[in-house]
Image (cartoon, rainbow, N blue to C red; front, top):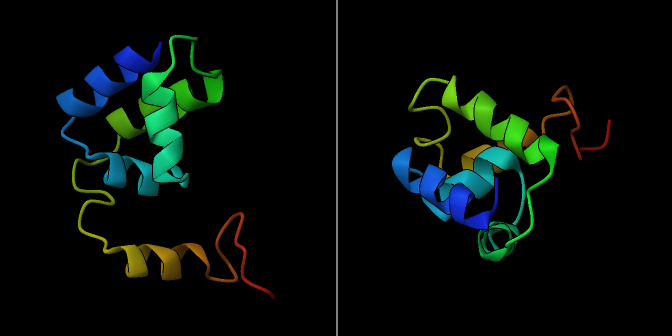
Length: 84
């Protein structure tokens, strides 16, 4: 999967760059860089996209950035940046 494939996938699945970045936990610039790349994307990115394909369509789309940030930074959240 190249950047063009990623962009096509994102559009076909009705995600904005902002929504995709929130769901994957990366910056919007990262999404832009990936979409501009002609090199194959890493397997971890491809696996994340496969996971999103099987997730309910409204997962993450109804969360505002503040809500997502609060949810992600809970002390009990996997990979949390919050201090325990």
